[in-house]
Length: 146
Image (cartoon, rainbow, N blue to C red; front, side):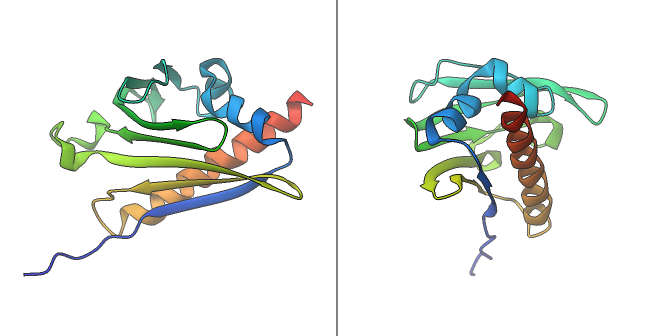
């Protein structure tokens, strides 16, 4: 029996800032809170170390968690992510893998976010929509910073 392959969710945007500035915004908890729906992030960014996201989503408090898998400033960050709001057991098969990749381009920095280990085809467009909103918020936040 073959299992169906569910694609990764991918969102991308060009941010008109230098790579180092975008990287700082993606990894500084004080800045993350400004553009990522008010989310508080707790981590030391050490490979293998924990990462926690706390906040409120659609009126519900949440505390998501995962582990830092890769941390290569200022180009690549990869972590696992689990949200108890899914109602699923806290088991490895219910974790997403989220990868942030930054590349210098003429107009600034190309940021690509890839969410892997999606559970269904329906989850993919919803994740892409959410990540595009995050990238839009990031671009707006950085443009206000000057």
